[in-house]
Image (cartoon, rainbow, N blue to C red; front, side):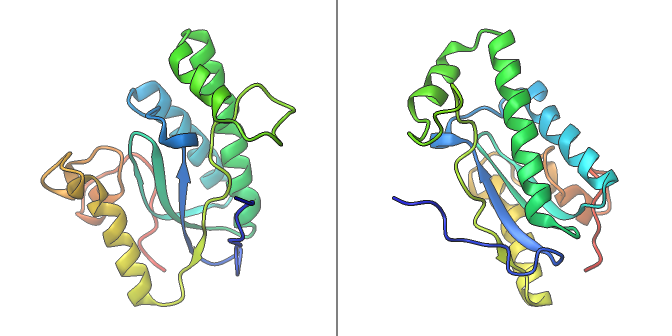
Length: 176
């Protein structure tokens, strides 16, 4: 299978994206791994990224975001988090996951020992308010549909809390 054909249609407008750990390996099961994602997202928010909605599950992240160069910012997010997460896994000798990241690495990634993220993020340009609402609902209901929580705002690593009038863990812009 070739590389993803998905592209950012309008990189300065909101897009729905999914970032998936290679081979759906469950890495985001500890606060330390999730914090690396949050650290990178907070940095990018300070650089101009706007986050409208997100959810982090054990092996992927759904995100609606926009910036002046969203494609570049997502590249920066994936690059930094991959490097830091692999560093954390190596420091803690989590060899089971490291072995999988090495085994499932794409052949053309010959410049590195591991591949952390699956290629692409399958960006979908949010073209209407209706589409935005549908994608936000999909994001927030993800942990509910998996049976992890009964109410979306109970999932700690989600913007559902922000949309329910509570404080979340990342700055979220509810205006679009």
